[in-house]
Image 1 (spheres, one colour):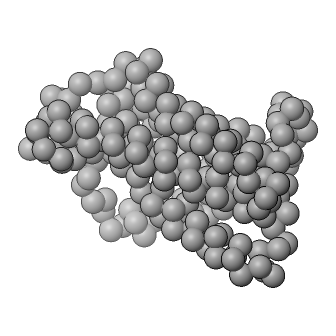
Image 2 (cartoon, helix red, strand yellow; image 1 turned 135 degrees about the horizontal axis):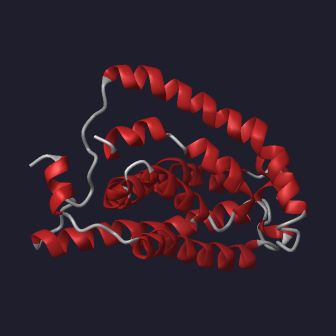
Length: 227
């Protein structure tokens, strides 16, 4: 059975349910992030937020998002499976990789390196002026990482979680599960999915404008939802 047939038979998520499922894990991640950061900020300031986010991934992101997917698979198949749960598995054309991947990477780098800094600074000074300074990653003093091997190892150990494992689970959950359930909204589905995914990062709300722009890989997503 192909993806279109599965989508026809899969229940669609009304907007309220989609909003809830997009944002609920973000709330849990933020609770863990805030709690761990508040404990470590005076003990290990250089790695407090790195450690807090890594533990947020281990204690909240993975259990909720991956657990929810396997729970849905269990309900559907009576055994652990993501078949019919995580969709949009078809490989894209080689030409699309060659064309879109470099362009999307260049666009993302431009958004975060050029657009984001002045926008973030403005939002931090105005809309989020009340936000605790110790909860802002860019404000953390990381100078001791190069002189303290133990802290350096902690930072290094966090990279697989934050750069590979966490994003992989998010891809399965947000793009493989939630986006297909919004396919009835056609061209609006990628926009809603992208905006809600950005808002789910409650620990860096000032990054939302640049993050939404950077993650709007609509040509790739529209290839699925409009076919």
